[in-house]
Amino acid sequence: MNIDIRDLHFTYPGNVHALNGISLSIASGEQVAIIGQNGAGKTTLVKHLNGLLLPTSGVVRIGSWDTREHPVAKLAARVGYVFQNPDEQLFTKTVHDEVAFGPKNLGYPPEKVEQLVEDALELTELQDKRDVNPYDLSATWRKMVALASIVSMDTPIIVLDEPTTGQDAANIARIAHVVATLRARGKTVITITHDIDFCAENFDRIIALAQGRILLDGPANDVLGQEDVLAQTYVEPPQLTRLGLRLGFEEVVRNEEEFLAAYRRYIDDHGE
Ligand SMILES: Nc1ncnc2c1ncn2[C@@H]1O[C@H](COP(=O)(O)OP(=O)(O)OP(=O)(O)O)[C@@H](O)[C@H]1O
Ligand SMILES: [Mg+2]
Image (cartoon, rainbow, N blue to C red; front, side):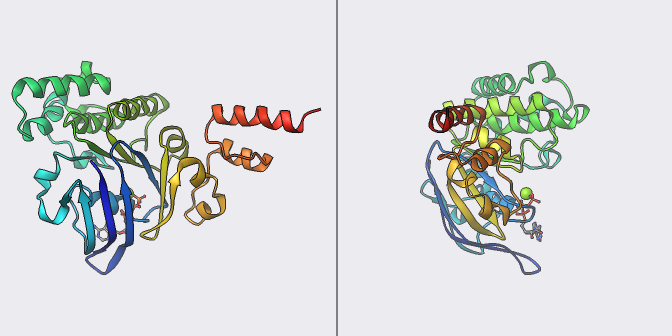
């Protein structure tokens, strides 16, 4: 299911111009990271995908649906949104009920609901916490519950707002595994992140926002190679990318594997 955004402007009460003419398309099954400094408009942009916010002007289409013409409850079947702060999202007494709420609400029969809940709990490694009250879990695990409660809705599009913030390395690896699994299932995954390493490792396309506009949009390596432009939004490419640029590698690298391959070619060319 494609996403199409045309000349989107959004102004908050008080005349805060959060989005100033965003146009972009995201094809079914794409994995996209959205980066940019605090206040760039990232959350405002993704809240337009499920109708939580409606354009001041411009158009947002999810498949053939204009978000202004379909209620949030209907859009929820197409776009799952994991909030930046899980405490805005969680409200039931057990992890199981939290994860079951979405698919129940979408009208799936009980058997199908249980199947979706089991799958989501397994994927997020929450099986042993199913009877626990989410508020008795650590903040890191509450974030996993928020993620599971959206995964269980089985929407074609999933939006994650800052999934790795405040997470330890083990949970970041779990989240990366969830993203990889969703990708393998053909889902569209859109992730807002300040974590440039997580972004470089897990996403093929990067969109950089600044002051409610698109600064860069393209394949991850191309975007990460634009060190000077990224600096405008206070984003530094990953360390290995910067090292590769300093060494004068011909191609931009974004992880260890790519760095080593480029380094071998570099040695071959500059050796002896
Ligand atoms: N409810 C609101 N009312 C008024 N202004 C708001 C509201 N929410 C956000 N803004 C403003 O809109 C702009 C964009 O905010 P937004 O939350 O979309 O940025 P962001 O890129 O998600 O930032 P962060 O990285 O801090 O989460 C900012 O200037 C922010 O102060
Ligand atoms: Mg935000």
